[in-house]
Image (cartoon, rainbow, N blue to C red; front, side):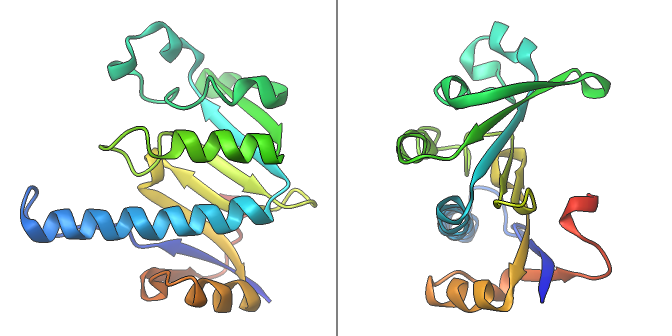
Length: 170
């Protein structure tokens, strides 16, 4: 059985305190492990962004950090008119994975550089959805996935089951 989970990324500590920094680093490590696990399991990557962000200086770009190096791998760019966004859809390959791993740690102030990303399986089901640069994390997990995440030292206490919904309905 596959269930949908949200990963708790809250940080209730005083910003800038030692506890706050420790929690931020724990979040980053957990999300990077989750992301790596699902990237290796996925067939397709979808990155959504506002193309107008490319016209801004890099430090002002919200949705396009880390997107340009991945665009050559897109086999389709879909317009999302209701949000004035685009979605770059890429088949995951070893070369794409290598570029993703290079881009992953380029921004110290962000968990991940990508504003919105989906990792899909071979049937088109979303395995992992990351939004707000990794601050919002939702995933579909089988019992086997859950056991593997435990072995990968991912804080499974931070997983909150979302009842009566599917990630494909979000």
